[in-house]
Image (cartoon, rainbow, N blue to C red):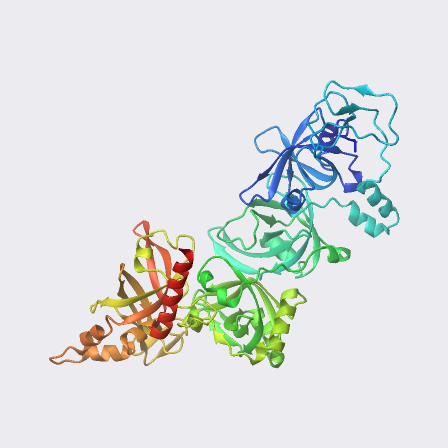
Length: 634
C-alpha cells in the first residue's frame, strides 16, 4: 500500500493556526516522528509532525492516548489531521500543534521521509524486513527510481475515498440553519486549553453548582460561586465567578444543562481548593460569554462520579480529598437548626443514613438547601428506600466517621447509572434483609467485618516512631496491640463541656456556664476527657492523644466520676489508684498518624480513634493467619 504525505503540510498549518471549524481544515497528511509519552501519568504523547521538508512539534491529548496504546498510531506512520489548534510556546518564538482529531492513513513506514520534493510515496514497513514494493492496480508505467531502497517517486494521484471533512461538509448541506450554526462553531476540548492560549470556545455540561457565597477582605466585601464543567470527552474543570460575573451567571448556569462558553481565562489550579482532576482552573468575568446549547445535550456526558465504598472511607478522614458515595437511604432525620460560630447565623441541617453492598452504613449531613429541599424529598420517600449518589463530600471523624456536604456537593436521587442499578438489585435480593453496621463501629475487633478492623494494617509501635514522615500528605491509619504503660496524673485530663453539643463552655458572669455553640447559658456542665497516655509494646513506646469515648473505656469511668475521686481526701489516693488500675492492660487500638506544626517545624501526632479489649480467640486466629502467610511466602 503506497501512501504519501501532503506537500507543504506544515506551511498549511502555520498559515491557518485556528480554523473556524473542522470542515475548513484542508487535506493534511503528515508523518509521525519521534513519538514518545510525556507527563507524569504518561497519558499524553508528543511527536514531530513532518511533511518531508519541515517539522512541527505536536501533542496528542490524553483523550487520544488509546489510539497510541492500541497501536493504531505508531512512530513513522502517517496520519490525516482532521482538526487541530496551534499554540505558542511561552517565552519562545516557536509554536506547537495540538491534534484534537485525526485518522490513521498508513502503518509505520520503513524510514523517515526526507526529501525536497512533494508527493513522495513510501511503502509501509514490511513484517519480514524486505524492502518490497507493492504495486497499485492503476500504476503509472513510467517510474522514477530513487537512490534509496523502498522509495518510489510517482505523480500524486487523486484520492477517491472521501475524507471525514468532506463527509461532514455534505452532512451540513442537508441540515437546518440552526444545526449548521452549531457545527460551524469552533469548539475546543478542555484538555487542549492552557493559560497561554488565545480565544477559545468550549461545549460543556454543568455537573456541579455551588451556592452563592459572600466574603470580606481588605479590599471590601464581595460574592463568589463556582461550577464544575465536563466536556464530551469526560474532562472536568472548575470555573469560578466573582462579584458582577457571579451575579450575572448564577441564575444562567443550571445544573445538568449544556453551554457554550468563551472569553474566559485559565490559571494553574490551587491544589488546596481544587475539586476536579485538572491542572488548570477557569475564571469567568462579566465580559465572558455563556450560551445554552439546547440541541447539544445528548453529546455531553452527565455528572461523573468516582465512588468510594463505605467501608473504604477510613483513609479519607480529615483529608483534603473529597469523595463520592452511592447508597440506599436507611433513615432520614428531621431538619435541625445549627448556629454558626463565625456570624451566629442559623442554617438548616438534616442527617441521612445510607448503606451499600459492604453492609456498612454511614451518616451524611445535608446542609442548607440540600437539607430543606432534597432532604424533605428523601423524607417523603424514605419508606421506599431510594438510592442517592452524592458528589464531593467531606469525610469527618464525628461519631467515628461521618460525611458532610459542601456548597459544591451534588445529590442525585435514583440516578440512571449502572452503579445504582447494581445496588438496587443487591438491596432488593438480599440487602434489605441483611444486618447493617455503622462504619464507625466497623473498627471493632471482628475478623469477618469486611471493613478496616483492629486486625487490618497491623503494625508495631516502632514502625510509627521510626518513620517520622508518616502522615505528611494526609492522615494514615494503623492498628496496634499494646498496653497503656503510663498516665500522667497531673496533666489536664478533661474540659468543661456543654451537655447539649459537647463543645467547650466558659464560666458565665454571675453563675452558670456559657456555650458559644448553643448561644445560651446553662446552670450545669459536664466534664469530657482530653488526655495523653503512653502506649507500649514489645518494639517501643509512643505518646498518643485520647478523647472522651475512648478514654472512658481505658480508665473505666467518666471524667465526672474521676473528678469526684480526685477531690476526695483520705489516706488512700483513690484518684491515682484508679489511673494505676488502667495501666498494663492489653488493648487493641485503631490510630491515625498526622503531622502537626510545632515550633516552626512538624512533628507526629498519634490519635486513638477506637480502643477495644483483646479478644484472645480472634487474636489467636489472626496470628495463625499471619503464620500461614509467612510459610507460604517462604
